Length: 225
Image (spheres, rainbow, N blue to C red):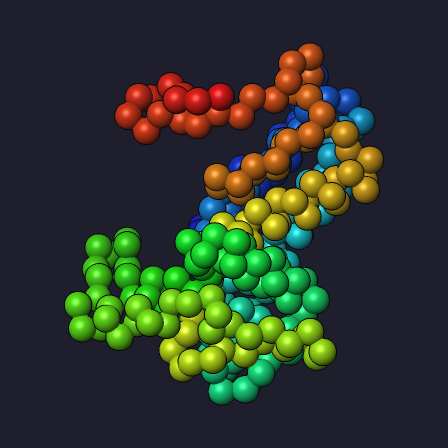
């Protein structure tokens, strides 16, 4: 969830006929990706309230779960949970519980402790750890090193050097929360996307939503719908 420059399209885009009933769209850079919201509203005011609520939720989750913000709860866990149990918010505790359950179900194929070694890579700079450094980090990748105590909602790490990163799991959580917010606000037709995590409800006017996988080798083409 690396910070990106502010989006140039942060304002709500009104429908073609002005600020009345229709479809509204807004895009912002949050959680290290592009957050897109498109919805049908009665007027611009309703649209701004609804989209603003979604963006506020995205910012809240980013502030709580970003491994790149030193004040986030997740960063505090990475810094101190191997020394002492750390009490966290209900939201983060519940999400960690879900993540560990997926790790159990997949036999560790999904594992938020990948960051114990993943943090050693800098993909933008194209750098990687040497073999000796990586060999030291690999035993730290084990979801069972993360210990949750529901009695006081605390999290601890069983070994020094363990790091966690919720990555796309947190983005999916943010998208699901955002759709729940829109429903509470009375929105019935909408799309929320955070990078590759998307959720739609209702329809897109007189046609259903289409969710497809882009073909990485052909511009404008898809490989599956």
